[in-house]
Image (cartoon, rainbow, N blue to C red; front, side, top):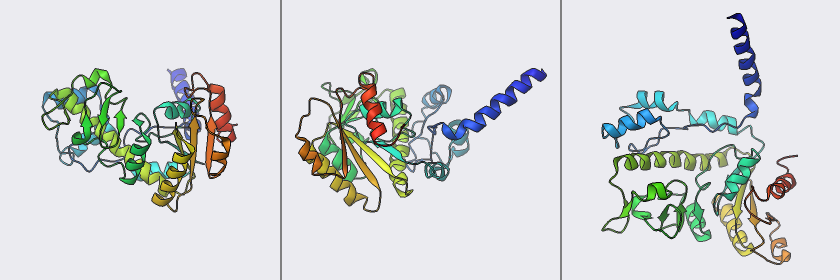
Length: 293
């Protein structure tokens, strides 16, 4: 028995000493303002909500139970941790390649709203201009089978990972021309997706207030678009230190002089955007950015 206790204490001490070096994805940052949104929950809690047909349940009335289930953390506590980071990386799409690349080298310490979507350049600019409002509004969503997940027709954005084919088949366009589902479990899951988008969007804007250098990555972008995006970010966030990092593969070829005209933008060309294929090239890029050694 003494040996077991001693082993437990050693492991606990080791974890405590190394905890500051381990990126942690918090399960929740705050209760969303919208009373019909709820976040990550256990299967048992999820099934209970569906069984009782509690989809639009009131978070204020159920706050204690929700806090116990979700293990909610205060956003100020998270911001305090993030304020000690040397830099913060944020993916702006075009798809999930950036998030996967950052993940591989331990450089994606938090999730942000555009990590797993496929977003056109015009859609990205409109999302930033509009503070990402309406990205999950049902009136904006369309069931289409020529792309991954549900399609946001207002922002030209595919919600690829959140509503892949397993879930998309439970949706259809109604007579008003937007997506709907009558499956109770999928309705509950939709609000769950809304909840973690709420916290990721809140995190996106709040980390920009910390005074920590921010790198925003965009894959598949021309030099003209990069200049436009750089100007938009400066206009939208005039007092924030943001470095725009643009990544292309060999299918996008431009004279290097085009990129030299926008020295504030960091540009890299990879043989393939998938980190599983071009791991060393991703590593070299992060080394040149001073993120790893």
